Amino acid sequence: MNSQHDLLEVNQGLIARLIDSFKRAQDSDLYYSFRRSPVIVSAFIITMIMFLAAFLAPWIAPHQTLDLKTLDLMNAYLPPAWEPNSDPNFLLGTDDQGRDILSGMMFGLRISLGVGFASVIVSAIVGTLLGLLSGYLGGRLDSFIMRVADVQLTFPAILIALLIDGIVGSLLPKAAYNELKLYVLVLAIAASQWVNFARTVRGSTLVEKNKEYVQAAKVIGVHPFWIMVRHVLPNVISPVLVIATLSLALAILTEATLSFLGVGVPPTSPSLGTLIRIGQQYLFSGEWWMTIFPSSALVILVLAVNLLGDWLRDALNPKLR
Image (cartoon, rainbow, N blue to C red; front, side, top):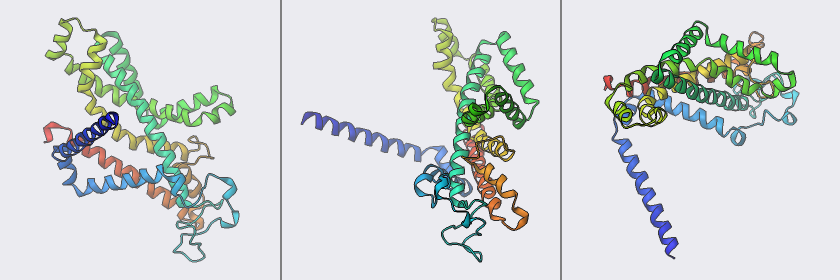
């Protein structure tokens, strides 16, 4: 009985803390800035709908487009449900293999968002680490990292991703490359985006390392590693969150571009870029829905994420409050 009573008290305390945290969040400047902008609220709702559609695709998609046994070539080239000669079972029509466009978009969003999130996480970790080391330690390490970053900035991100994908593809056997293609794509996109994180974190670290609390930590003999991790890093992490939000949209676009060019995700796991590439072959023959709907989903998703990133950047900027 005592253990059950203690567990009940712990749960009640946890719920009370959650309610208190929620009330504090409602009273914050960030929430006030969010709710007073209908555009940002709409962007957030659209983003959440697409995230949920991608996450729940295996359970809520009308058709399992990735299961070849469920495909019927007799259903190919069906127009959207409101067009003549359509099938109400395929709301947005079908492609050249009889796959449902709506279901394909949901599974495509799942892959596009997965690749985008993974590449942003990798690039944020690598860029933050290199920026922190470069700004705090300085010297030759700082010069080397920044010169590498300067050289990379002279090349477009898509070219860096294509270069890395091509190098890995030439080094690995074809079978191994096809199995690892998704991971290679994440690595390629991450390698093209780490510079933005590194340069921003380096600049913030240069400011923070000269402040009194860092100097005090040095005086009492704290190891430089713990100074960077415990003191400097928490104070330079805010711009990283903003850059990560903006980089997510760029990562999704880069993945879609690579897939459109045929060097992205495998054809057996099509993303939005792959669906657009397949649909554009039939655009001028009358099957417009194959490319219009996936393209619209990609544009809306990138626009919504960019709007949220811009809002977050302004909301976290103390000079604009």
